[in-house]
Length: 283
Image 1 (cartoon, rainbow, N blue to C red):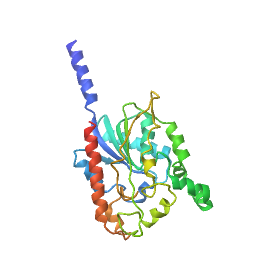
Image 2: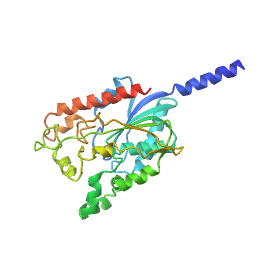
Image 3: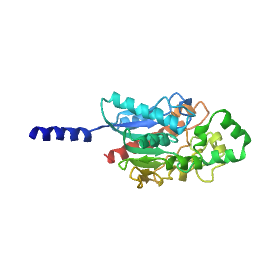
Image 4: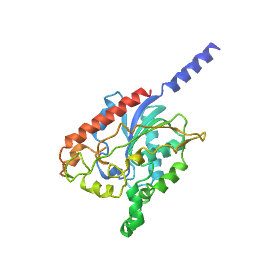
């Protein structure tokens, strides 16, 4: 009898002591850049003691379902690399939040915390506007098979989220960012020319792609018990960078003629180090 109790205790401790890792999940247009997440972001979590994996092999224009399946396979590869059960802490940018929720809905892995950064829970407003009013954009979306982009409209997001059921133990925390418009489009502290164009079709402050209220628009995610999932947001802790500056290496923007790129690096380090500290409080 003592042996049975001893083995049972070992089994319980093994389950409780599941290895924790951080997985960084890219968003839409993920592989159009050599590295979606800058080295500074990766180091921000490594410096806090986390082992970091960056999800790869996603389709840059893929649907939520397609990239969700790729991500699910990646999680399996992480568990193999770690030789056992893993408790996943996921930091996902933009549509990467939806890819992760797809995996969470399938219930094959333990996702302990999902921190989303600029995930458009209320849809990407300018995409819907362009689909409604631009024949050229509609044609491009059809010819280029941009179904994944169409899914990021308000109706597309609502349809996806209505199908999601996650573990009652999974915590989802939303963060976002925004920058002001300025005539000085070459200054890293303001929206650049391309994102000023898209921001023109967004009716609130934004990062040039995702409206700030959309990034914090939690509340509709349900659990497998059909109860409200654990959903949190912090409107006072935001990222003062436009959408692509939030993740890409700051040096990439030098090639685009952007000044003050050191500001991008400092802001990434500040923000993501804060997320790493936040994860430590959740252990």
